[in-house]
Length: 426
Ligand SMILES: Cc1cc2nc3c(=O)[nH]c(=O)nc-3n(C[C@H](O)[C@H](O)[C@H](O)COP(=O)(O)OP(=O)(O)OC[C@H]3O[C@@H](n4cnc5c(N)ncnc54)[C@H](O)[C@@H]3O)c2cc1C
Image (cartoon, rainbow, N blue to C red):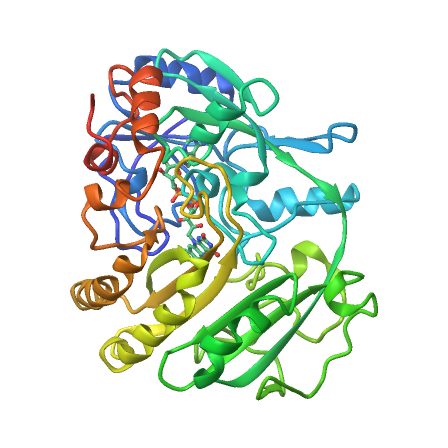
């Protein structure tokens, strides 16, 4: 199906320049669209904040393809439609008694779009979402259909999952699964920022998944998502002390963004519940985060955390006019070539900004001037002011990815200006 009208991203700051937007109802229809296109890209749910998904030619949305979740209990994998949102995949896995290891802060995003940009959740032992990918089915430039699996070609898979949408249109993704489990979430407020650097290891390892929210000027709020029966709660479900590391158990439910309704967020009462109803901060039926916002994020080597926190506290006043909230998470290192956590355990420093693009970019530039020298890598789906060649210089597999692009798409059908700037055609 061909849809008309300009497509914009979720935040409304990017108007895609595609001549046509398609919503194919079958893989066969998608293959024909790709085969006859000069330039073509997939659009997931449009939650990226930059023109990564854009094309001057044909944009294809995959949410019209059959929404299949095919569970293989022997392999402990589920093969899911690439355009499906994590919310629906998670719900269907849970009903069948299975789970994913982790989720991002929101379940609204598509599986392929999230993996293509290196999207991550939080947790000392938790890698980015792309690390759970055991296989991909992709439509190539001639409309050809290829299947790539971890078992058959692990190195090529590591190069392809965080593919920035430039290696073809992914039609299905095979994900590692595990038996369903429960999470209990609690929130502590009033965490003193003075303690953050010294106590960060204790904070980050206090639960299966931990998020710290702050504006870098006042105090911090810590969201602890404990896996019940896990080592950090001694198997008890996690009795919560009223006071913890100088912070207090929150008096009631919280939202990460000041002034937003806590009812939009997942349960924080400490009552154990299904993994997918606790790991994301935001419930699928509501707007995640604020909506009127821009975002940027840097992933740094874990050892640089304290130095980065000190720099950000110095920038607190400068960022204040445009910063809504900042989130600190940890991500375990992985092997995906373009994962911002490739080869190193990382601390992820996220910024939810206001929608004043010029003022936000000026704040991002000031922040990146301090943090890029610490070895930071920007999130592929968010805003950055760092030059493309400086970004790719931070990836040991950048040259291999460039070669993979040239081999998989010799005519550059899936390229766009965002990709060209990072990985110029060979
Ligand atoms: C409110 C909010 C909260 C967020 N929270 C987090 C978070 O917790 N952690 C985090 O890391 N990020 C987070 N993000 C960023 C978000 O996860 C990424 O921008 C992600 O790419 C969004 O997925 P999408 O489906 O919207 O992708 P899109 O923005 O639609 O596309 C992203 C890229 O994926 C490609 N793509 C999409 N589908 C396919 C396909 N089928 N085949 C090939 N390529 C494809 C596109 O071409 C494009 O290059 C958040 C964003 C928002 C708006």
